[in-house]
Structures are given as C-alpha cells and as structure tokens.
Image (cartoon, rainbow, N blue to C red):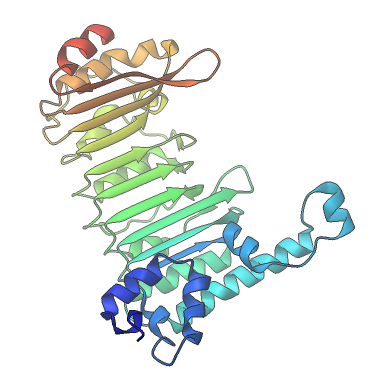
Length: 322
C-alpha cells in the first residue's frame, strides 16, 4: 500500500518543501497522483551554488583544471540554466507562494531578477522574502521598485543589495521582521523604510551594511522614533556611532517598552564615544530581558563580552558601561 500518497495534501506539500526544488519536481514521475503536487508547494528556494553542483556534471576543461576556476562561458551557461529553471517553476506553479528564497552571485543590475520580483509582486501572496547576493561590483544588486509592491510581507531578509529608491512607496503594513546585511542605502532611505513598517518587532543591522550620509541631519533619535514596537534589536555598534555624529541625546522621546532582546555586536575600546548612548538605550528599555555584548580582541577573534538576563543586567552592565 502507498501510504505516503494517502496523506493529506497539506502534509505532502510540507514534505516537498523540505526537498531542494529540483528533487521536489522529480517527484512528478512517481505516479499520476504525484504529477502536480510539487507545483502547489508554497515555499520556493533557489540557490545557484547548490543548483550548479547538482546539475552540471560536465567535466571541466584543461584550462579550468589548471586555474581551478570555471570559464566565463561555463558560468554564463550555468546562469542561463538556473534562470530557466526558476522561470519554469514560476510558470507552472499553482496557488499562492508564501516564501521565496534566492541566493546567487550578481552584479549591480540583473533584468532576470527584476522580472522574478515583478512576477511575485503581481501574485501578491508572498509573506517571506529572502534575497542573498554575492555582489560582483562595489555595491550590491539594485533592488527594483516592484519590491515595494509586496504588501503582504511579514519577513524580509536582504543581503548584498542596494536600495537607492527615492520615490515614495506604500507601507509594509504587515512586516514584523527585517534583516539587512551588506546593504547599501542612504540614511534617509533607511528611516523611510523603517517608518513604513509600523508593526516591526525584529530588526537586524548586520556587518557589511553601508548607510550613506545625505544632506539631512539624521540623528539616532530619528532612528528610534521609527521603532515604536521593537522587541528584538541586533546592531553593529559602528552603525550606532554613525547616527551620533551630530549630537548625543540626553533621553529618547519615548521609552522602548517592548524591547526584550538587545545585541550590540562588534564592540571595541575605540567605540568609547558611543558608550553613553548605549547606557541611555538600556535605561530606556524597562522590560529588557536579555542584553548581549560582543566584541573582537586584538587578533580579531570574536568573543562575548557579556550576556545578561533581566535579573542581573541592571547591575553588571551599567557598571561596566559607566
């Protein structure tokens, strides 16, 4: 008896979501009942690197073996096949797409990715979007305006992207999680993005991001005014100091009553200028449950300076900072 085929459709789709998309598509040959199951899975993950490993079985040429690097022709051929596979899946897909992940190397512009995002924005069912790019130039892939048409998003993860969009855009009314890593954008653009997410609860500003100073006097107070319901905050400390260039606030306009987890990464003794604000930030978070301070030593080895819970952070942390 084929017990798997008798499972509820939702369970079958959950199982297929755990497989790489190529393997999920291959289940269509099992039987007539399985032919179209894979076209209804709500979670799609495309990774250029694993795709190349699993599909490209041609032997490398002598030159490629000598220099231990694929030729431009082979790279272009693999890239074309990768995009063709994505197009085929999106063309045959039925039903809503709730999660979409794309990981690949890319230059500052890519028409194919623009078309993929435009297609997803037309369906307007996406709840989680993860874009992870290895940039080939000085800045990352420039995100198109169609990204801001994904109004149903609850989670957005961007890595290796550039966001220079100056036009106005509507709110991400449902976005609760935002992760930025290796992202290029103007400081004003960051504030506009954060202010368009009124229910943002989790914010990560990780290593490699560049927030370009523009004409306005953007302050750290402006930043926290955009985070009224923040619960989880992870930031690199040099980012905080960038927003302290104009003045050190003596207090925040409103207390961060919802903040429960605060992680300050990449601390060093050179950051002494921003430590008073860190003390202010802790004092302004009456319901903080976990504080984590991470810094590097002289050998650039990461270690945890302190991780404190609600019971002990007020004594230990404040004495260390002050």
